Amino acid sequence: MLKKNRLRIAMQKSGRLSYDSKKLLLNCGIKINLEQKKLISFSENMPIDVIRVRDDDIPGLVMNQIVDLGIVGGNVLKENILSKKSFNTKNLYKLLLNLDFGICRLSLACRKSSEYENLQSLKNFTIATSYPYILKKYLNTRHINFRSFTLKGSVEIAPRVGLSDMICDLVSTGATLEANNLKEVHVIYKSNAQIISRKGNISTLKKELIHKLITRIQGVMQARESKYIMLHAPTSKLNQVMSLLNGIENPTISKLVGHPKKVVLHMVSKENLFWETMENLKKAGATSILVLPIEKMME
Ligand code: ATP
Ligand code: ZN
Image (cartoon, rainbow, N blue to C red; front, side, top):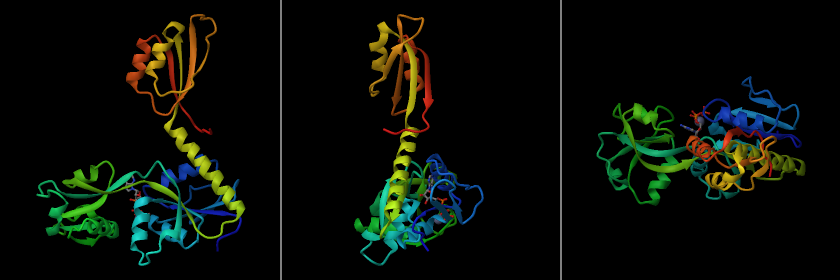
């Protein structure tokens, strides 16, 4: 039973999303022991319980209001929604935030030697996939005939052993495809991890906690993308140095003690500073250039 005053969050127990999901919650200041792989763990400092399950179970737990929040791949969520017979799926959950991990794409791939040309040539091909509903919807919308079957694992092996001509599977770097002598030919769906919430009545206390958590998660993600930059620059070269740091707003400029012709610049950059930019800054007269990670951020 869902407790009134404790927020329940479902995340993947072990797999590609579990490390990042765990890290995200810990970075938000939730004190919780997630080292032991227990089904349920309780936070010591916030009214939050974490449920760890297979990722495929997360949409159901949220939609059936067994948990309040879920961290799940967009691909798993979409497949789950499409598999439902009911057309009224809009009110089953709410997307709260797209997360910056679990980035992958669902793609069609075939043997490197295959004569695949475009989607139209699929009609003579058999496709193995773990995502039959996403594949079907995508190809049906485009009026493309195809044959497919479902494999829940080892999809990438299917063409090699003669089970299928193609696969429709998740890709990130493409290394698995390469190792199986396959080539990616068409992206069907781009995915990332998402935080979703259940529908139905949610107490004010829980709503406030969700709001706090989402604000913290946004802060963690923003901090991950940003860098704190410090450097010394001759006052006479300030414009030149600033022009190399375009996109950076409102730097703090202060005096450098003992160096009347130099200033110190502090600024937050929304992106990393590349080695090339640092070398150009140095050429422009900047010294003591530091690029530091930011742990937390709130605007
Ligand atoms: P479970 O045992 O929980 O069912 P699984 O084997 O179905 O796990 P994983 O391989 O751990 O799933 O992938 C979980 C999710 O991570 C995928 O549904 C997808 O959203 C994302 N993902 C998949 N492949 C990649 C990848 N190569 N890089 C990043 N994220 C990925
Ligand atoms: Zn799974």
